[in-house]
Length: 263
Length: 66
Image 1 (spheres, rainbow over the protein chains, first blue to last red):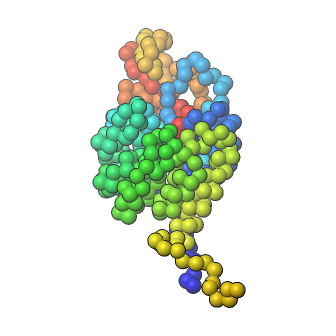
Image 2: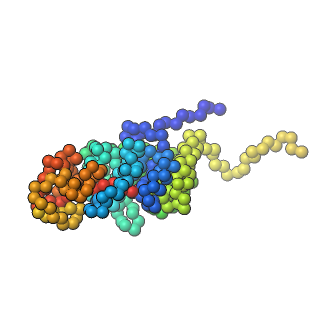
Image 3: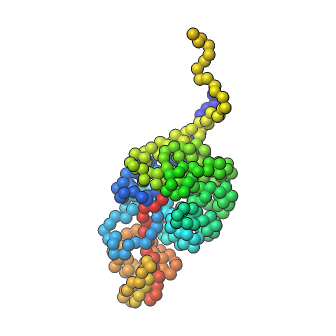
């Protein structure tokens, strides 16, 4: 029996993280639920969106980052709502200023309001500009292995193919493409979008993903805090199973109990 | 003078800095980022960056998102 393998640490842009679960902060009932769910998830990296302040309305109201503090979490600003490279780049520059010069960002450029499918052409354009400008780009993309490869070649620090469309909870819709991306990738691969329940996250980890990013799966569960806890276990279980090396699938049965000594 | 603030016309007195405007919006000390005519205005330059007629200003903050 060979010695059990040691896990390699989860390293993103030079920083090591203990948790392989990344969570979003959107779609919760309120800030308090957001805070409690994130804590239950054990996540260390948390995405946020960047939006105009409501002029005249927000005086006194706590800001998200008052409750989810940059001193406790790695805040990962996204470019959600951007439909072209220019908007995405502007948003990233604002985000960098917002977070005191932090270069780590999540790039997403969408094509379509109905599907929220990534516009991979604009994503590639934005990635190129952002990497040149010194950003550490974690990039949301489709499950197209060629695009994933190109994004890594441009210099993105992580490639994040969707499992399914944002907010659909459909789980991994094309495991074959994801497998190809995982086989080829020279940078960490994180599944982002489409996770619906714990088993989806576990499957992603069993396939060899470095980590999983999810938002709706937790926030839209009947009991978000409980689901956050489930996801924490799901990610750990999946990672351990991957490290442990699953048994091969077989066509025919192979008895688990010995034949000797049958009465 | 009139500027465009977060996409809407906004009136303010001449000679106002970004810091003055943020104070007027009750955003002093809050975590926001400012873009003026498509360029980022770093926090360290808020007090020394003065607004002019027709300026386009974006003031953003972080909110929940995936």
